[in-house]
Image (cartoon, rainbow, N blue to C red; front, side, top):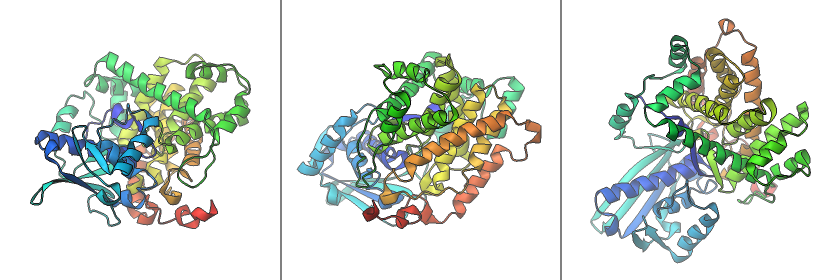
Length: 475
């Protein structure tokens, strides 16, 4: 079934550390509550059991999957919950062994027994989660969901297919792949961001699009700001020291600012030699993913594990390339990035549990490269070339987080993805499209084939690579 994918599907505001293992289960819990409410049975529930399967089970502890389930079942919203309240809410559930289901029905709930980690995989997808609500000994209701990456949650039966199709019919430009996107841009003589904007207008008012895109950017900016001003050790037991703070202090010195926006203005005044540029881009990316690793608020872009690439590259453009850049450029960048992400989601995957880290860092790098290329004056053809180059040089990248935590090597990989995105955009700008040998759609197909060929232990299971080569004792 074809999907209608909005920019706001690809760029979601949520809580770290993982879109597939934290945000997805959280949203799945919300959907289960909604089903119970629809059946008028939420208040009748006497107990709940949650079964995690495959990658959700194997790396769930490191990704706070169990905590996300508790928060979702207790009616917390990942977009608005004060992140400083998360620990208190989950600690209370664990201590009291009770949960206020949907904010309406307090029941007995011991996470140690009510949340079951099953190492076996369900056939449909690597990230399976089943909720069972019990009313009495002979009466229960259950539903199984799949967290397919980027916070997207589906059921195998695709019960919402008709709704998706109806929404898609509203799009003036139906885009299934890069070839469709380029054809529309060429025939309509529009930039890629303009094509995407027309599609978004079929779903939302111009004011809503404007406000939501700026809300996404401000969340990214605040996340970078927080990460650059927070020091200490990340939670989880690996004793990973935050690096963005020290790097930021070395770069900006004693500059005077009091908000994310005035901070941005001060960075524009700093030295911009090549080494400093590399450090700034890396600092921005590190900052975001250190916040993500601390269960902080980030923008899923297209996943939480790769959330630092797009803000780092956009910030690079704002503070290094174009000091006059403002809301117009921010919106243009995010529109292009979101559309490129949707092409990968439709043609391959954005789930590391299905495709390895190429599906996260590779896709985010392609999204950022394409968006930067358009801002730098690239034609629609060159924009797609930038995305192709970025992904081509991430093909085969495995997902092997140590102890299942989105820290090593995940945080550093965001710096690499951001730098590659900038490099890819520059290469695309210097490329004549008629000389290109590899179109973006071929790389999308190759990425998907590589994902299918990849050994399962390198797909977010912590059963291969660095995850087994490095022990907790080494840290």
